Amino acid sequence: MVAGMKKILLYGPPGSGKSMVGRYMAQSLNLSFLDLDDLIESKAGMSIAQIMTERGETAFRIMEAEALGEALQGRSHLIALGGGALLRSDNRRLAESAGKVICLAATLDTLTSRLQADENSRPLLEGDLSKKLRALLAGRGEHYESFQLCFETDRQTPAQIAWRLQITLGRFRVNGMGNGYDVLVEPGGLVTLGELLREREVDGSLVLVTDSNVGPLYGPRALESLRKSGYDAEVVTLPAGEPTKTLETASWLWQEFLRAGLDRKSTIIALGGGVTGDLAGFAGSTFMRGIAWIGVPSSLLAMADSSLGGKTGFDFPEAKNLIGTFHAPRLVLADPEVLSTLPEAEFRSGLAEVVKHGIIADKDLFDLCSKGHETVQGSLPEVIGRAIAVKVKIIEEDPYERGPRAALNLGHTIGHAVETASGYCLRHGEAVSIGMVAEARLAERLAVALSGLSDRIASVLKGLGLPTEIPANLSRQTILQSMKADKKKAVGVIRFTLPVEIGRVEVGIAVDDLNLVFQEK
Ligand SMILES: NC(=O)c1ccc[n+]([C@@H]2O[C@H](COP(=O)([O-])OP(=O)(O)OC[C@H]3O[C@@H](n4cnc5c(N)ncnc54)[C@H](O)[C@@H]3O)[C@@H](O)[C@H]2O)c1
Image 1 (cartoon, rainbow, N blue to C red):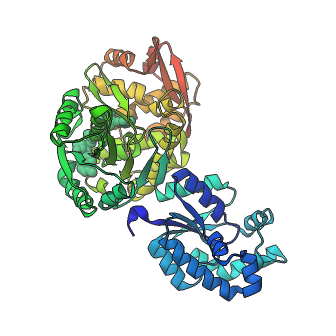
Image 2: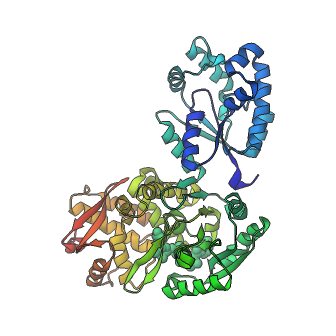
Image 3: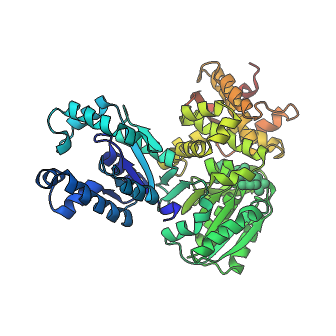
């Protein structure tokens, strides 16, 4: 069993929501779902209640073990188990070797009220429900708590629980552009790249586009994984860094694709940071009017932000990100372990986009970031998963940036201008960090936000080692001119995305008097 194909097994006491949550997750992730009790009933040709009354619990447990073995061998990726299915240690061993077991938990009161509203008959709980349930929990409490992944489900809807589980598991699916695509956060997942491609029936020739820093570090691991799954890939290596992101490089990529004999069935794999992803995605979106591409982001910025949403492009001398395409990837695989070699300054730059996502829609993510660099380093899969979750929701709602997607521009209207004015001496994330603080100050001046928000944001960014003030040597005039040239201006007015509070932003705020941006406090 490979990481990409591992099953997700939902377990827990009756009433914990395994079946409902499983159905939501299956729908959201486009996975096939199986309820183990349904399988047992269809194999036996009678209901669980009948099996219990007519054949007894021992016979039921034997049937359950058989059904579990069958389900774990079967095609369903998401399985809801019965509340006692893993009491037998051999069942538990089997389940844990086939996938991730998640134990859903809830208080006695929650379980009781959910079961009272449930019409399914539960033979083990017949009679005084609350009393029976208390006895069942007393007997199995330790067993349920012994699972590594335990989830409280009180006061949440099945949809909310399912979404939280997806964040914890690092599994998302983006719909709304192309045929939809999976986004996976999988520590160590790079070695499963080939299997993930096979799973998705990727066929045809492959080109791995990477850069001169990332290629030597991770190219061999990616190629080995592809080879093990029967793929052969040509490697094209770009010089590392932002100056590479030009039309000339895109043109060179097209030549390399022709040389490698790519056709319309071919797939490009972009292994690298945002520059590699943007350029390889752009070259792929235009080559033969668009061929498939897969994102394997290797920088924090690319994992949390740039690899998602299908925006591709190159730097145009007059203004950044002015020209490009929307071209959805076929898969995005983020392996947080590769961040161990990312230079510190690049990591910090990526943190700015993570904080941005916290400000836009996830206060818990912002609070996590406020605990500082070490805490963030120690919780990378969660940090990346949360940042991705924010972006996924937004790009699904507005794939082609016609409205709400502008939320993601937080910090970018001023940030891009500062980045351009610095002659790209500032990293993208550093400029966004400065932009977020400047825009939060603007929000306070316009009474969009309460005073104090910009200080709070600045303090978290500073704590992560990011700059928060426009460097004194940058001309305010150049910054203003650059903002006017920015693509976000609409009919002469620049529209900002401004923070209202942590976890909420407002988009499309027109600001006529740009001098407000530089007004002293
Ligand atoms: N398409 C979008 O929606 C979108 C969104 C945000 C930003 N972007 C773009 O992303 C780009 C910035 O991305 P970036 O910060 O990843 O830049 P980058 O690709 O230049 O990577 C930064 C540096 O880190 C190196 N690197 C990357 N991963 C590494 C690893 N695991 N180990 C060692 N070195 C590694 C790279 O070689 C490079 O030198 C900008 O061009 C920006 O415009 C695009």
